[in-house]
Image 1 (cartoon, helix red, strand yellow):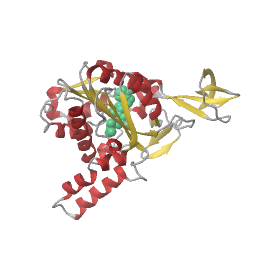
Image 2 (spheres, protein in one colour):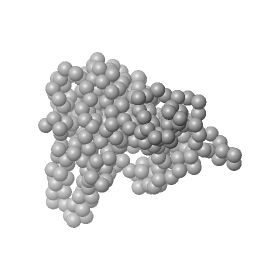
Image 3 (cartoon, helix red, strand yellow):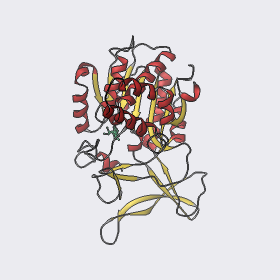
Image 4 (cartoon, protein in one colour):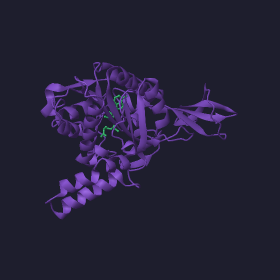
Length: 332
Ligand SMILES: C[S@@+](CC[C@H](N)C(=O)[O-])C[C@H]1O[C@@H](n2cnc3c(N)ncnc32)[C@H](O)[C@@H]1O
């Protein structure tokens, strides 16, 4: 999964911009500016609640086309103390870095790029990650004869890629029927722990959106998407987007292991609606024609509708241990 997505010459992300109608998939910030604006308002409010620490930096993990960062910055430009906030983008794809630089050209002097979170200077963070954790590689283990054996990729008799069972094992208390699959993402957990440690040490807050499940449970969620449809994960390595659902229970544990406090997850729809999605749509639609109103209505439905991104996609927030709860809908 790591090679298919990140190989310097042939990796899916390293060789293309996969977003948008002409690409393979569309993300929340690409659906509407309202998503990033609400994230910006949330970050600003959470920053104030955490004591408005000076020297804060806006950090985005996996910033895609830079659209979310641009929408967040439009909001932060109105917040005293955050107007000129430095921006750190953690991005491995050269193609997308170029795209981000174009989108954020107006902020050129204060944007830096990093291969990993470790490169971001120590400071209070306003961190956002949308559909980042699902792109990190998972390891899968198959229940076989009472053990969890690692699922591997090899070649079948015809020379085609095929799944098999390797010698590696994992010890866990989970029991499941023969053939069940358990996924773990050491890469996602390590980054979440690092975020937790930075927030515990330097202050700030984080908000993460992704599709996934609340509780750790067996299930095969590895999927390949190409041109807005599902495909076989082994069919065209490097040509389709590979993702796995995010295990929010594991992520919460990792944030806590770093020393910070996770909040949620709650549905993306619940989060956006509680923070004013309908009010923002009404404001943007005021005085505009039927087509614009209809586009806004459709965007609200896609971002927050239970059959669209409202329920499967979830939001999780992270704050330091010693501050009041953040503006998170179930805490309002
Ligand atoms: C699904 S896209 C999401 C883009 C953007 N957040 C959005 O919502 O439109 C995943 C992003 O993560 C980046 N990415 C994937 N693996 C990464 C890694 N290991 N480190 C940093 N960025 C990564 C991709 O290049 C891309 O920008």
